[in-house]
Amino acid sequence: MERTLAVLNELVRDRVIEKYAIGGAMAAVFYAEPVPTYDLDVFVLLAPPQGPIVSLRPIYEYLRQKGFKESKEHVLVEGIPVQFIPAYNALVEEAVEKAGSKAYGERRTRVIRPEYLMAIMLQTGRSKDKLRIAQFLESVAYDKNALRDILKRHGLSAAWEKFLRGLGA
Image (cartoon, rainbow, N blue to C red; front, side):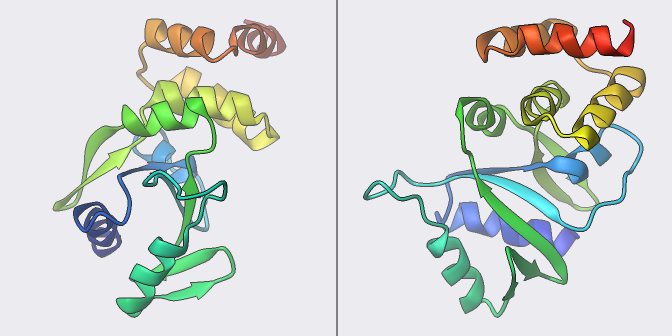
C-alpha cells in the first residue's frame, strides 16, 4: 500500500492531477474499525477540461507508461486496485480540497476528513453507507459543528435529521 501511495503522490508532483484524497471504505479505516473492501477509491481534482467532457485519460496514460495495467474500472497500482473518481459535485470537490494529511507507514497521504465522509455517505444514500455513518456516530471522533455546517451548506440537513430519526436518536 505504501508504494501505491507513493504513486498517487507522484501523480500530483508530476501535475497529472491537481489533488487527490482517499475516500470510501479505505478512508474510513483511518478513523474507524476496518471494513472489507476490494479497492482504493481515490477522488481527484483534475485540471480544468478543454471541453465539455471530463477525461481520466491523462491518469491512465501516465500509469500505463509506468507499467501499471488496467482491470475494468481500476488500475492495478503496485498490486492494489485503484479506482480514480473525478470530484463529481461541490461536496466532493470541497472534501478533496479540505482533506487531511495522514501517515500510512513511512508515507503521507491525503484522506477525506470524517465529517465529509459522513456527508458523502449520506448524500450517496446506499444501505452500506448508512451503516457506516452509524458506525462513525458510535466510534469516530468528529467535529459535530463542522458536520452540521457541511450538511447545511450542501443541502443535506433534512436528510440528516431523517437519518437520525431512523436511528431513534
